Image 1: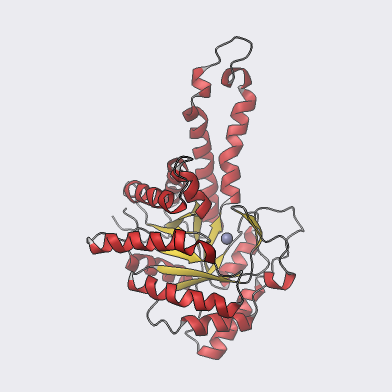
Image 2: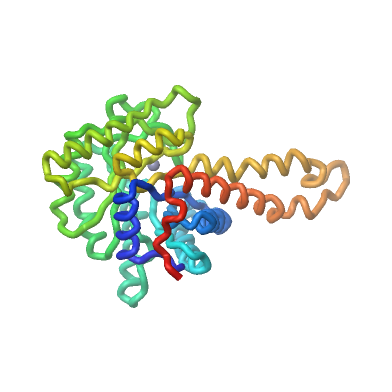
Length: 344
Ligand SMILES: [Zn+2]
């Protein structure tokens, strides 16, 4: 199916919220990883989200171009074509964009969608993340509101973040962040709702933090407190009425137990980002291939090696397969298997 349109994406997210499941949002950096994700969603009859980070975009554009925006555009165009071959919906999203990267990443991507819309084509991306969490909340929202207005005008959903996701992702580290910043307060959540509700008719997702971290840590190092999300949603209903709730995003989902994930679903998480675990799943069989076939992938002492073994396709197929399996596991963990809205 082609990439979901705005109405379909909104239906997907509302369906997840109403039925207490979440979509896996998997980072891609290449055609191979995109194919792995599409197949994983399709095998599980689940819709899902494919996302590109600034670093992923830059990588995809190649060392000769090194442009995060261009690489993201090219990957998205590829996904638009490839997704048409699968019987599920996917939405295209961009991951963390810090304030200093807005002009070089988010703006050109939104402009690309504006150009497409002017020609009667569908949006390039369905949603973007603006991560202003490094700013004080007021400045974060001051920067989020105009972006949300521009997104609304183009039927794009905006993801925002308050609080800080710990750990390191894409070379951005919050290792030294103050502990209290790792947990968004109910007051902050009310403020986010208050400020963004001003943009009437806009849709947004909110990454509140509850001790989650990017990357995978040894057991015991991460103190997840999903009750933060429950308390925030309850504060919202108390202040703004029964209908008030956030579409919540769970960052740093890699390494979380199924129980922890399930608890967050019951509090309104509708999207969980998975990157570290799928990165590992991709690399694991490559390591195996190289170690088992050492004599074949290398030309040792005048030998010629084995072309069948050093042809990158030989190990990238294994990597793709393994990543697909990990995507399928994420879909199961998030309880979205069999929920596709696509009807052939
Ligand atoms: Zn994140």
